[in-house]
Amino acid sequence: MGETVRLTSAKDGFEFEAYRAGVSDARRGGLVILHAIWGVTPHLRALADDYAEGGYEVLVPSLFDRLQPGFAQRDTDPDLMAQQMGFAEQTHWGADVLDLVQAAVDALAPPVFAMGFCFGGTGAWLAAARCSGLAAVSSFYGGQIPDYLAETPRVPTILHLGKTDELIPPDRVEAIREAHPDLPVHLYDAGHAFVAPNGYHEDSARLSKLRTLAHFSKNSGVRGES
Image (cartoon, rainbow, N blue to C red; front, side, top):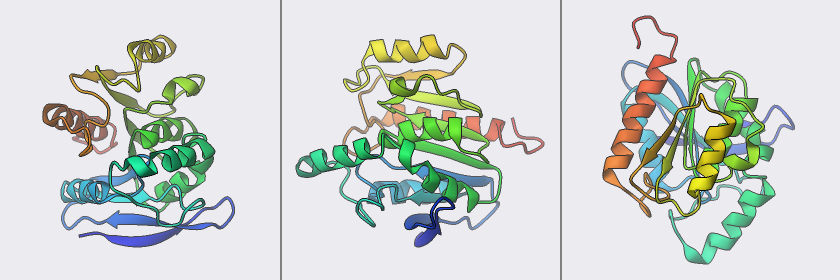
């Protein structure tokens, strides 16, 4: 359904890949999906296609292209974990690639929304605080969000976290809530990556999607949406 396109950073002219899934019927808006450490995987492409079927024109930018162009692996590969964690750390968990996120936002007609998973969940948090042109953000299990609690989202933002996520223990969840008491933080009976194949939890994936779609609809700015 989708295709690979090339986008350009306004910061330095760097060209990078993104997966694009277009809409075939009524358009609800644009959506930027930020990937986990595994890159633009087949799972994320399928997810983009699914949101496109629901009326969202989707772009999934390849955020590690400056480090390894076109990177995409399976959603879990222990042999590559250290390398990919290194990529995440080199980009300061997305802070240094927000120009690529901004390029994706700018390539879509409004309203534009963003969502992200794991590494991309932290990136989505940072995009909500630093990027322009977004209407709303939905962040999934962004483990490094507590390192950026001084950042304040400039657009309506919701978080989705797993109650048994060992990478985001209760004290870090509580730190988020204390720093941003008005921020909706949804907890699910699941561990990490409950939307992805390697940690999939059906009920949590379904409910978090419903909440995300309601959040986008509420903040679309389209008359009649609620």
